[in-house]
Length: 575
View 1 (cartoon, rainbow, N blue to C red):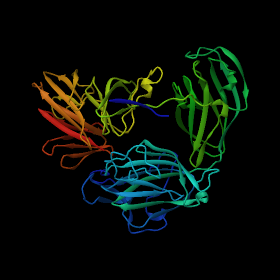
View 2 (view 1 turned 90 degrees about the horizontal axis):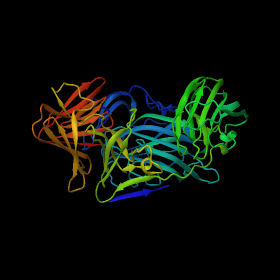
View 3 (view 1 turned 90 degrees about the vertical axis):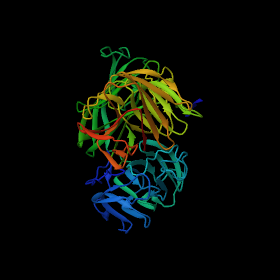
View 4 (view 1 turned 180 degrees about the vertical axis):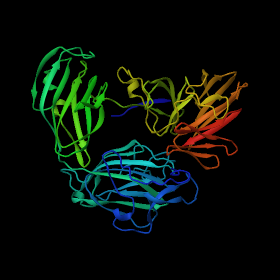
């Protein structure tokens, strides 16, 4: 039954690859992992290595390669940084062995759980991401895959003594906790170290980055001149100047309540600290763009409920010219906001408070499978593609293994584990985008057809195979079985939850006019880590029958994993 809820390398790679340098994310500073000199003591249960390879199950010891860039820990002494922090952002990657458990200990003494919890059906205190409150969902990957963790933390809370606040915690790109108030076991206001602890198994860390957040404001705006044009809100060009003037602050209120307008601001940006600055626009309207020194920093299209868009620019110390263009939807309240941040500086607003009124409430609309699978037809936008996929179906299972198929191409586009579908953009108000978004831990599989006739095993895989969609039927458990005509044969395609994996079976009726293959995966690195088990980058695993003969082959700068298809051919994916 469908329920709608509205609620406000395994291996670093098969032969372990040395991580030769730090690649901290964005405006983050790197915690050096060339040796243990960034830490208070060199305990014997911690070491710096060049790489680690971990099987997703079993008791085999991780394989280690010499070098630098990867910190590996086992049960024993807690490892404490020499770095002292209070308010901060933290970003890192970690990799756990089967059954491993450990913690990231924040400056106030609070512990963030990291563990081998990918197979848990319900998030609890043993799930990765737990810190005084259960994560909203289990977004952990399988052991052996590198995972990402990002958090924003305030070591003290104004007017709430002996408290800290976890603003956000994201695991593998999924936000699992927001605005969690925590008791402080340490007085972290003056700075306390960050620490790492392993209580079971082995845990590896790399690319550890941090931002120590201060309240200073190294960038300001001045000499604001504006022009307000009365052309229709959706006009591509504007020329009807209504009024102009100067403003002491950045605000949309200079439009004096006009229902339709185009607003242009020009002025100076005063920079006291050179560096990379991240600008965030928050608005409601058809467009809001920001140019600095004649170059575009942020250009974004329609925003209906004060969505945010970001852009980064390196600015030298001194003055810079900037220009902002904004237009309003006449049926929505105007809202214009601009926020800025840099490494070591807490984000702050450049607009007046009244320029960005409280947004109209926008519900979160989801689909949650109950006793049987749910199916939703929608458009799908794949990252990096200009156009939406228009003939797609997404299938969600009650136990959390979900996927999207492009019916035109017979392509498995994406799969995810956890909560099923965010359909707000489909069903709220007019639902113009008609886009469905995965609500759990997503992996991109391929934009190309999953099955194709090839002249030989070395022939290039077509972007869209010569197949015709024949419809689908529903099996006894409620899963769709898709049918395609390919040449003189008919292929049925069944994707079902296997409990701890997503299982797929092709069945062929008739005689194909050539050799039939399936594209199981593509990636920069595809490694057979044991017989029949392949790791696709650090994204997911593919398991095939040990007697089957899959082929790993080059495809430009990428690699492909293909499998001959005949009679009944199966494989599974998990992460």
